[in-house]
Image (cartoon, rainbow, N blue to C red; front, side, top):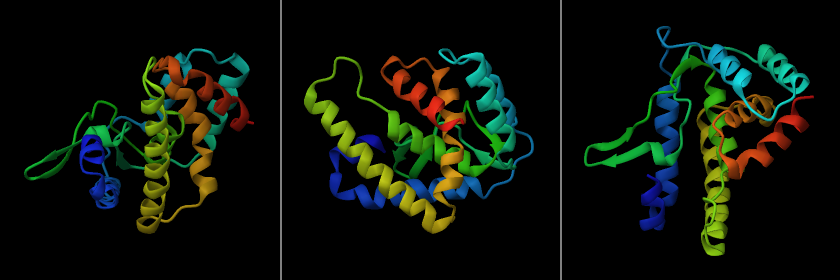
Length: 188
């Protein structure tokens, strides 16, 4: 789907809507056999680099206060994990799938739009285009998801320090500084 955005930009709006519809359909499915989202996040946060013990504990307390759920959550849902096939879109890369709160999946996608960066060494044009595209996708994505499954911005933002701390464990150098700032400023 990400390649579709680049090669057929006139389909951007319909592709984002399709992306959201796939995610909403996923979130309406209940699955008790998958690992617990909460436990996976707790485990990953314990391994996250660059967090002091105090900040790590604050983030884990935030996680404990957030609502749980039994919906299927992808755990890494973004346009590059949706293949456009002749039979329609197919969601791939399910290795982080859990059962939990759907808003966590939405917040993770939102976080990736907020901190995702062009690869190290990318040209100014690529960095600028990446930022512009991510911003447009992010705004439209949240608007479309909210239409289908209403939530408040506060509910979404409550997940950000938890997911930013978990994302640190992925050790993506170009994102680390922004993630640390997000964790430290929002996990109060």
